[in-house]
Length: 144
Image (tube, rainbow, N blue to C red; front, side, top):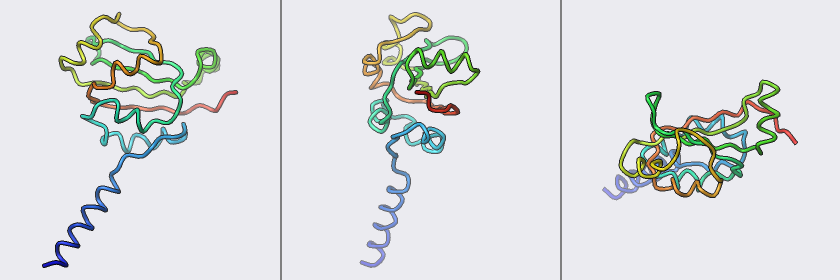
């Protein structure tokens, strides 16, 4: 009986460790992010931000419309670098986060225009919103 309890405990711990969220420390890890986004689904944004160790340089948003729900886009390049990459036909690295449509999300987006840019520090106004989906892209070279 004790052996069965120990075996179940070990299996539970292994399952938890395997599905644990990883800290994201570089853009190269964005490509692997897709496999772990379900770990964040239904959780507040702050859980994802704790694991994201790449500096956010700009944030844009898209308010709920016919095309879809409220979302924010985290970018990791300065505006000048972003524009330089776009001129070269390269889509800069970014992470798009969609939120569930509930009262808290509606309140957070209430005073915003349909789309626009936000101060990086304002990401915390979204920290309690529940993540519906995350999509990442990182097909860019590092630009200095």
